[in-house]
Amino acid sequence: MDGMGSVKYAELGAFLRSRRERIRPADVGLPAGPRRRVSGLRRDEVAQLAGASVDYYNELERGAGSQPSEQMIAALARALRLTADERDYLYHLADRPVPVHGGAASHVHPGMLDLLSRLTSTPAQVITDLHVTLVQNPLAVALLGDHSGFRGARASFVHRWFTDPDARRLYPEADHEAQSRAFVADLRAAAARRDAKDAEANSMIGALLGISSEFATLWADHDVAFRRDDRKRLNHPTLGLIEVNCLNLFSEDGRQRLLWFTPAVGTDSAGLLDLLAVVGTQDIVEPTR
Image (cartoon, rainbow, N blue to C red; front, side, top):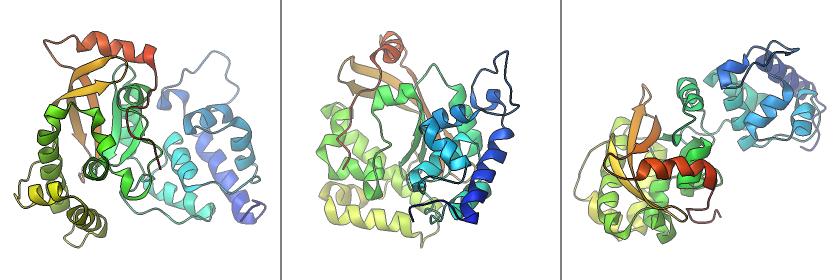
């Protein structure tokens, strides 16, 4: 469907506007400013938060323009701090199917998204229990690379770890064996927390068992352990080796995790992390495809 002239798309525009007007700038980490003419967010602020052009967002609120993609709907839901029900309604108004839970377009828990917006001085991101990255702050992109372009099975870093050698460039080769074992133990723990018939987890595990002999060998060991507090060594193409503590905050159902990275004590990583804002985004992971 090319146009957005139907009654439903007019409702989409009205719904976006109503959600925009209820949010204070401070709720999303924006300064209020001394001369605001609106009580909620401005259209350009929503566009900025969602990674869209101002013209495109203006067209959406007018009920015009092209049908938004599933990725854009997910970005708007996060920008506007929609609840899960509101997010599903937005997909309905846009004539898009609600994505399955756990995919790259999954709805980020609002509380985690709020915390992420407040973590401005340290790398942080929200991932699913199957290691699909949902949202990253700029410092996480600078440290780990941009994960927003991965789709399908490749959206999971665990899947990429066992199927694409380029994904392992993030860690020193000496750490690969330990990382592989930790990923498999964590995946088994995550699958156990889900329903035994969970199609998403079972599909991922089945695919990896058929593709990777390394995964199959480790899976047969039956190790079970969630990754909670890790000390990691990360390869950065500009700054070199960075040692960090990776801390985890789990959602109530365990399906999402807020990760943030702090410098490891006794290393020079604090200064290196400070340089991330200067270095900016870099391509540390394999190209998306």
